[in-house]
Amino acid sequence: MTATTGTSTETSPALEVREVHLSDPLVEPLLAGLSVEYRSRYHDLLTEEQHRAEMAHYAAEEFAPPVGSLVLLLEDGEPVAGGAFRRRLEPELGEAARLARADVRDVDGVPVIPTAELKRIWTHAAHRRRGLARRVLAELEARARDLGYPRLYLTTGPRQPEAAALYRSTGYTPLSAAAAGDSDPAGEQPFSPLPFEKWLAP
Image (cartoon, one colour):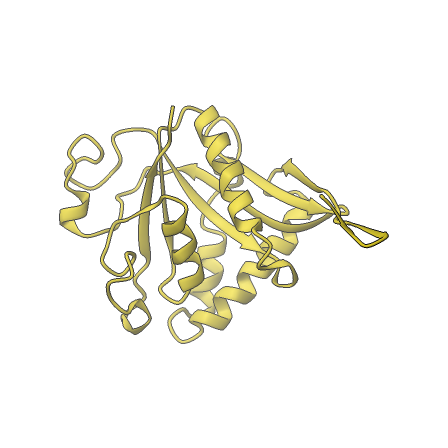
């Protein structure tokens, strides 16, 4: 993008979208940034052991084709944002009335249609308020659609109102009152994730 002011021209660095494996060294800033974010917001809810277990919970293959993807936005070769998805095979969270569709989940709440779960959405602290998270979402949605997923699911934390607002503003349907912003999720104990879903256009 080029913006012209008077006689000078200012050029913003181009962003490169790159699909990578979880073991790629370029993923380290994403994981480190998420770790700092989670520890700062949930230090009184998650122990150090729980935090480490959550970050290492999923196998790398879950975030690789043909079932998943991990993408980074690079600026001058450095990661500034990223995110991933995997196939959701566990029961989904949410309020019973909002989870009532039998054609979406079985009696245990497990998706009965292919559902991609978004994970690890991250923007470098120095690059926020640039719309990068929206760009990451768009990239992940396109890749999930290409892999045959008709539906997306995600959760975010009760102390991440910016993330919840982003998902609501980009077409994700809240699956709980707290996710919809109808209650104060920050006051909920114990830790209660905010669930969302989105159907992808064919």
